[in-house]
Length: 91
Image (tube, rainbow, N blue to C red; front, side):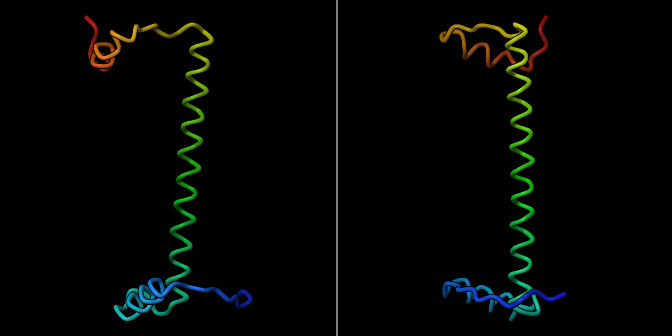
């Protein structure tokens, strides 16, 4: 079902971009360009939310490990060597 028409203002740059995309055959109309742009924007927002949720889980895990005492204290002068050792098999 088509939505009610809306009035939207575009910059000359965006109007030119839409015209060139339609002229090049990438889209049949300016409306298709806008719908595609909105689909991509929505997908970007979804990815961003998933990434933020992942970072929140990592933060929660880190806080839980700290609460359990599962961490190492590293002196500032030893930080470089400690970071360089990460990922190496300990012997």
